[in-house]
Length: 132
Ligand code: 5GP
Ligand code: ZN
Image (tube, rainbow, N blue to C red):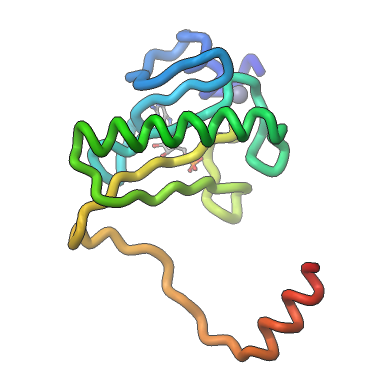
């Protein structure tokens, strides 16, 4: 994809701070980290998002995510992680090339995640049935 930002990072046309690379995957530091160590892991082959990615590519990506986590434990003493993928504009996806965010966490770092909703057991049961 000639106009894709992350394809240009894969090819080296746009510089990045790469931390891991193999035949299928590249991983590099996020330019606007939510915490120091915030890393992106992407398949080299272009796909728009996780829904469109091949299982094979996702397998390689998740293997690399594990390597990145090990690196963050070693370098920034990560005590935990948020591993997320924003899929679609509604979910906050801004770059339309499949990627996972690997965000190192430390006890008490105060980074807030989503608020939870109250639902009934019946609502959960109906939805689970529909999804199955
Ligand atoms: P999204 O919102 O699509 O899930 O996340 C895209 C991420 O890519 C953002 O966290 C953003 O900071 C990062 N990003 C955007 N442009 C660049 C860039 O040119 N280089 C790097 N390293 N990261 C980028
Ligand atoms: Zn791309």
